[in-house]
Image (cartoon, rainbow, N blue to C red; front, side, top):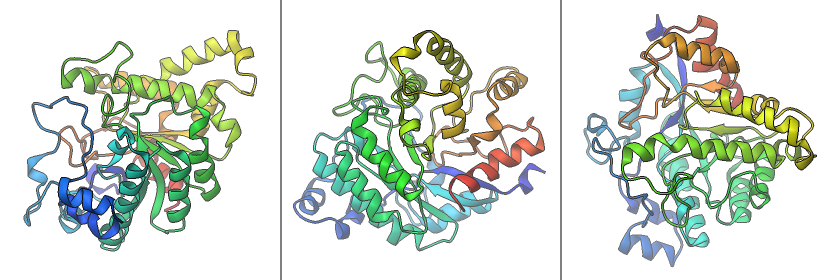
Length: 352
């Protein structure tokens, strides 16, 4: 029975009840700024007609959806046999802020809040070290500060960036993560906001539907950059996690990149293997939002093309409007493949 299979959920969006929850962890002048004006997170400007979060996930005690640790356990984890939840929060938009010092301060305060107010409440929670990559050295310092916490299992930043993530200005982040044996994860949310470029290569779309659909294009650019800039040669033990960016686009990207590499390898002499081999060895992906072809067998074919069962992990994206529950997706997979995707791959990556 699918309902009896335990799973690890690698993308659970716990939320703040209020920005004031960060005040005990902020020094001035940032504390006064948040107390008087809120966090001031840049938005991408695209409005979802169905909202971003599910209204039925609002805790009985009040506050935003997924803002109560106890209710999150009852509503998600106990109901769907989720053994561990990797908390990803709602702060990755800090990568779009203009002020690197303020962004780093917010990230640090948020991390301290997660440790004190979430990770201490339930053994089943694991945290992400949210980082602001505008100043990679401050981001690396934050990883160093918290990497020793036994429940912090990855570094996390937004996929909305001012440059492709393989470029060398980001390498201090990867060096710190590798030094501590932590994966680095990215998550969308702020593409087109603040100081970041347009959310698509063609410019700014008109509606949320377009923005939401085109997020995978941003992930393709980051993945090609990570491989071609030699990140996985320079940091051979680094694991990278691509959350909420889709998966069905991966086979054609690996084919295209391998084909072009064979003719243009002189431009990337530091690569010693086919690009697709680096991807398979170093990059993990999450299931949500899982693509849904008219014929479910087509998705299984795509999985077979890329050996997905070995680098895909289950994610619900709770409590977002399009979240997926483990009882509702990938029912046609072999039991062995389901076991890897829903549990084993995350258990190994996060050393749970």
